[in-house]
Image (cartoon, rainbow, N blue to C red):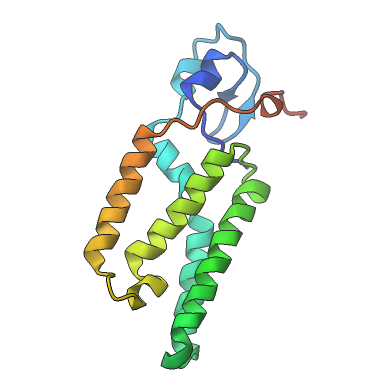
Amino acid sequence: MNRNIVTVADIQSGSVQARRPGDLAAVAPTDSQAARQVDTYFDRLSKYVPMEIIGSYLLVEGLLRELLQPEVMLRGLVVLFLLGVVATWLFTKRVLNVVRTNQVLMSVFAFAVWVFATGGWFAHLSFWAPGWGTIAVVVFAVAVRVLDIGPLPEDAKAPAAT
């Protein structure tokens, strides 16, 4: 499964249509179904947010809070956050087969916003408060609506072999 976002530009080029959510295949430019296959705001939002990594982060964070002493908790949470950033990049590229670098970066940003919003290691910083997390979530939600990630790269538009 891949989670490449399907944009109007992809449909207009006549080379991509989502058969199932996230799957890419070649279509004719005159295909009337294509216009209905452009990802909606909520489709894009769900494709940006790396739920598998967030779930893993939650599990490990809970274990760290149980296993680590308070004096090393901050270091453990920072390491977990950095591992989450790297894992999000690799998982999005290799497992989810996302081909746009902008989309991968948005997924990494979504992970960082999620950790910031829920506290994580950020909660140990003097300026952090839950209200800042709420603001970060709102900024991310607006960015998903406003930012244009552009069409798929040419090498991703070729029909997949079945």
